[in-house]
Length: 112
Length: 114
Image (tube, rainbow over all chains, first blue to last red; front, side, top):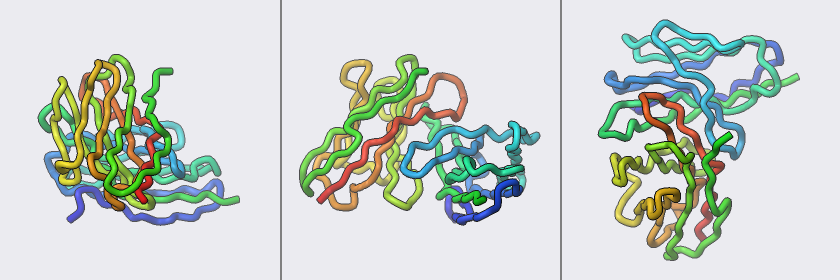
């Protein structure tokens, strides 16, 4: 099983749609979880952290289910500018490094 | 806003040549990373560096790779004898103290091995 698994997409949605991305991770000892965004040929940037209680940042809602080792991201009222690849990221505690492990990413295309 | 800077932005080299990719992390950050991304594939961890030593490395980071922090500001990745399959975007990242997952990435160095 892959360390972090995502549906690669692409998800093609009309502007204003709601879209949900899912992610599963294999290491039950993983401690922290994040969604990063990567625009084409650019560096990844943190979108939001994911907390057990679920958290929201504007149009974005992230949820974590530790028992199922499952993470989700919901985007409401999608905009053209949301078009990007969304990376599910898991952090484990190692010897001082706190390595981030990235999923393959889910590509989102928001269309007029 | 402080940022991670990387040079060169693009390097083309012949197979078998040595390449050094340079990074200047954010000045008060303590943890440094190199990741790579082969075109169309996922971001892959190479190595993490803390307190002047490697804290973790992946299977990809074999003997042809090395990292250094020679002068307290630069953080370099050396690839000793490049192979065709080393062609990728190499991202440097840094983060501060605390258990936060926000890595600040540089814009990347694209390496093309011919």
